[in-house]
Image (cartoon, rainbow, N blue to C red; front, side, top):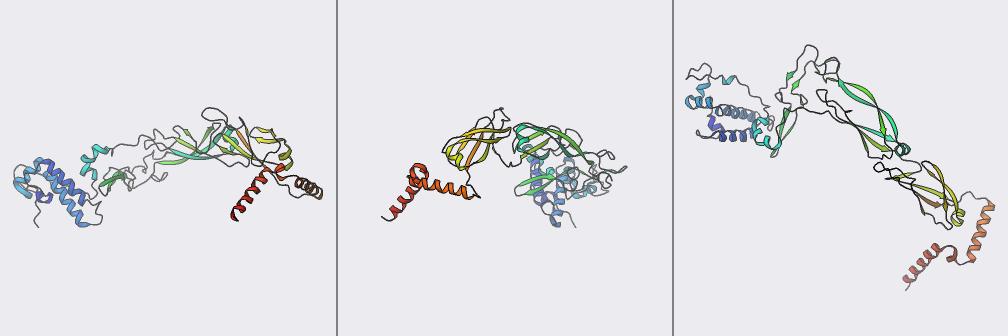
Length: 383
């Protein structure tokens, strides 16, 4: 079967310029690339045809020989002229890298860094829970971190003794593949070799080919006073090492403060609810309220209503930024007594009788205001 003309394969005239040949190749190679047409044998054969044509026409000497002798210039044993090429001994990989096809176009825009190695290891993250007291006062915690270290049998190579790594046939040793998505091509690590460019067929029995083994390292973490949920503590160079076991990443300790059974924190202020009895609310007096440093006394004025907020300056949390202390805000609520004995009930009944003989506005202004509003509401409904 006669071979197709190389110029016709690329859709060119015989006097086509070099840049026209390159442009035609890129356009057709992207269209018929096997990665974009997986399982399509016709596209794979077409791609091989296109690449073969480009290999000839993009090379000055090969193109000259082709223009003069046609396909006969590359036939085995041909003695045409002084040009000898063993072109058909070349191999065509169906996994040719898209970067080879249009790297000139995208390389200047996105940067061609296929051969760059990671210069820094991965960061590690550790979640730490603290009590409110620990977060407010500061403390030191010891944590155990699982870290990867170089295997002491294969020294990080991942290979069994005496074996060698083979070049990955999927990415041709580049460690990257390109996948066409719409008008763009996305570069990602090769899944077969995990971006290494080589495949190990005889892995190290100790590390199973990873080149690393897991070890536990104990670290002391100093927790500064005033730290809060969402804050992070960075430990430099305590993360994973890179592929060459140099320049490790960092370890980030993420803080979460557990709920407290008395206090609620809002930034640098603390809130708490304190119950008071009816007598204290009506007549006033002194009560003890808790702080993180112990109990203190505060004065409750007479006729204090349930829900009143008392601010105690400087009894909150010290700011981690400027060392200023927040406040403690105590919200009092009047507790209704339960399990009353007969004597207590009699006293309350007498109090109720005495109160009813006086105008309700004298002793219960809030009740008067409420019931006045209810009366006005019904009066307007009956108009």
